[in-house]
Image (cartoon, rainbow, N blue to C red; front, side, top):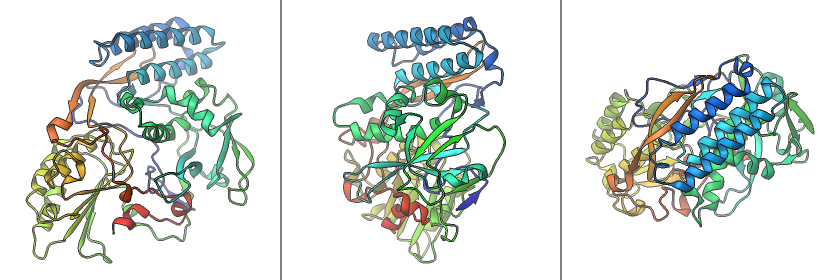
Amino acid sequence: MMRSKYSLYPLAAGIVIIVLGLSSCVSPLSWSSYSENLNLLDAAAWKSDMSTLESELLGHPKLKSDTALQAQLSTAISQAMSDIDGAPDGESRRDAAIAGISKACAIVGDGHTRINASPTARYPVALRFFPVSQSMASTEYELRVFAASDENASLLGGKIARIGSKTVEEVLDILAPALSIESALGKPGLEELKNAAIRAESLNAFMNPILMRGLGLADEQGLHLSFDTEASPTGCPAVYTVLESSDAFTWNYAIDPNAPPALSRQKPNENIWYTIPEAHPETLYLSFQSCESDAGPIFDEVIQLLKSSPAPNRLIIDMRTNSGGNSMPGTRFAQQLADTEVAKRKGGVVILVGPYTFSSALMNAADILKACGARGDPGSGNAVLAGEPLIEPMDHYGEVVRFSLPNSGLVIGRSSRLWEYSKTSGITPDNGFLGPTPDNLRAPTFEEYRRGQDPVLEMVL
């Protein structure tokens, strides 16, 4: 197994905390931690917070003219207050309140509106869905333990059969109403894309003890995992209870320790970097995992290399774990890219994307497609998308404003602006979502992950 002190990435080991970045943040508040005193709040304090939440969410531009959505929000707030009243003690009130706030935010359906805070204690086991088959056309998914603390290392590679008394499918049905995903995913024909969004969002939720207890998926004793013993490695127990922990720990990954690191995992602590692989001297690989305000100098270096002589004849831009930030440096990079030879050659630019390519990263992916000649159909230009579909539509709400609830101090973020990026970019996918063509759809199976492989990058190389 591989050990690391760094955050988890979807290809290397998943994501521990997904902080959804935006092109602009117009609030001085930032992502924070839950207060340790939330269990001391009485029902009246929590219900006051719920009323404040409702008032603030009604200011969302999406709700202002949607009476049906307003009614759903009102029902969710009332149910949360009822659950708070029915809680027997302070810990149960806190858990019910967090679950209720999460469900109220999820009703907005913009993917951004959510609690902008994380619990100080976590279940030190990370669960991730892997496709059973290498073919993405039609496949099932399995839930595996891909990372764990030292104390839970015996679980690595284990296939989850149940959480508590619920099957994995039943767990997702319970979890889904508390996950902030795009309401556009509810359109007919997008069922699998919606399922992909739920699977992606579940990664963080599974590690949140307060949310999991509030939803009835864990209890005060811990997170109870039952394993498929036939599909799990030797030594993995049949049933195991994960205890929450607020202590710092080192992640162990279910990757063969003798596996050579894939190119995409060679600099796990850097968000933006590039290299020319020794085995592929004609290719420039750019890892672009965060839309950072100071990314300009690195982008300038990449453009200079692409205009040098001899220049790489192919550019791979890896955006699979880029959840956003400041879109402007990436937009400027795309504009400069338009003048390079790789942008004028079919397949000269390959963009690796997936369900964690979000917000400003979505915008920058569209900017790059446009720079490479695409108009309307994303595939009409020279750039190619590879990996998995995005789970946020081209036209989406963003630019988060943050506010804190008066009694709990919880920071909530909600969108304030509709970005009609199909008009801005001129890129208009048929279903509203960017994604690879069927021949470029790929995600690692668990066995490929265990061997340390990156089949998406291998495919395009």
